[in-house]
Amino acid sequence: MGKHENGYRRIERDYYPTPAWVIEALTEHIDIKDLYILEPACGDGRMAEALKAAGAEVYATDIEDRGYEQLNGLVDFTRSTQLEFQFDARCNGAVEDFDAVVTNPPLGHRGRLGVLFIEIGLVQMNSGFMAMLLPADFDSAKTRRGLFGRCSKFAGKIILTRCIKWYDMPGKNKSPKENSARFLWG
Image 1 (tube, helix red, strand yellow):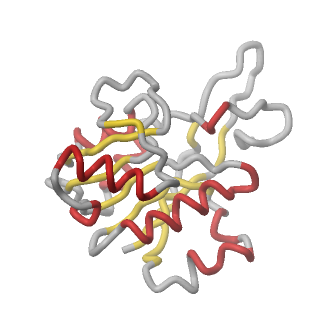
Image 2 (image 1 turned 135 degrees about the vertical axis):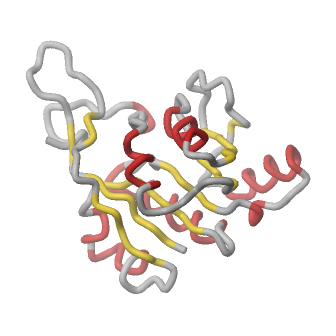
């Protein structure tokens, strides 16, 4: 049962914290040790901390402060010029200095915000890679073919063999879960 199916109220701004094991599933396939990673939808920092535990240096931003003490700034990733300004002002570098963009993007209505995150990430990434956590069937929509099969930067996907339990529902036997995958571009 997915987190966006009937019977479950959508959480504002698609704030669904990602468990650490999801990063462990990524690091089974990709070595992120000593990489400089942008996490643009860090929420409460669970994914950023898991990336750090795997040896990465992380620049964590979000559109809103969710209490993560290591938050580097409030940035709307969908406004890439804001990201460039924020990063350049803090680090005297360039967005291209990131080795990777790794996040669980908000999907928004009908996945449109997730698509926007991918499109902006493709522009922002230079010679590095991007890893987006998405529903496993996200690449099956006809309107998204340009981001996957037709995209020369699309490298593949890592299908998670466990369902992510997004949150508990008080008074219910079930919690929203869905099949997910880590989609890779690079």
